[in-house]
Picture 1 (cartoon, rainbow, N blue to C red):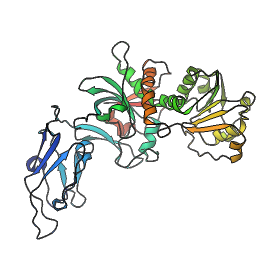
Picture 2 (cartoon, rainbow, N blue to C red):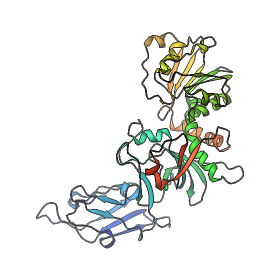
Picture 3 (cartoon, rainbow, N blue to C red):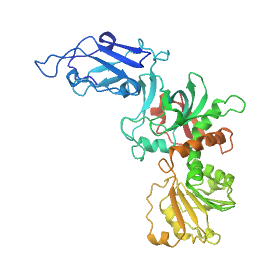
Picture 4 (cartoon, rainbow, N blue to C red):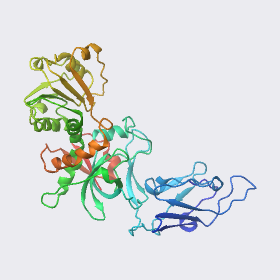
Length: 419
């Protein structure tokens, strides 16, 4: 990042070119910057910048460079002392694979909790041997995406932050339609370079998917993944015809969990939520319990005492969960899986509740399963969603360019941005 005392314009003082054989960018300065130390002569230098790693320049050049400048961040970067702008021209450079560099766009969160802004950014370099370049079609705002954008989610990295954890797009240059997911970088951008392991080709029964189908996949895979991976990696040895309780059964993820529990062999599925009308409309429930909206800890779970429960999938957490675990006598082993925290409450639980029951408690989220397990599950998960076997998500679309305006709008529909 430059720290010169005079403005530096790249178009006339820097020449950016690539060498296809070495996959490097040669950055040559036609003018040496003034010395930060008076009386010390600075020799003209040439720095080589590999795409994968940009080495630090010698201190005498008083110039530092970051790979994110070439790959991810805004096209205008400022020095810390004199706010000198370094602008990379996108007209003279070409990708080692032969395609021209073009500017892309990204959504950027600069301050935790504020709506993302749609900004221009330098084009991506050619993908590495283990990467795929993707032209983004659709990307959704999931609850986890909003939580990460506040800086309060355990998987959140540092600012600036690019929102998004998944999406639907096409590979460049062969145009295969794919779903992708990653927590290592944001996905709300017009183009992405992603590890091949994070990308799954979408099966197309008739050879093509409509835009509406792509929107459904972009909105539904993430809420489906929570309970799908819970069954895949966090539940074991359930009895035949098991009884499953879904806390938060009217949420998008909860509705899908009800369907998945039935497909996984549940003999009885009980839904729990605050809205009785919405509960009655959830497909696949055998029974439902309306929770106490004002005081969840006073919800009546007595109807579950006689027959007991084998599995709890919890999207709510907090005092509602405490009351359920305290009520159940668990005449047989109980598996509890914590998936979400819609209540926003902690779970204070007495030791006696755990000692007096045969309860196995697990969490289901990034970190609780391995990347290998996730990779094994994703093709089947995408196939199930693409085939329309699960409840359709209520969605509304907007242009990614309008993200700052749309971000804080309220509604029951899941917002899907189109690029």
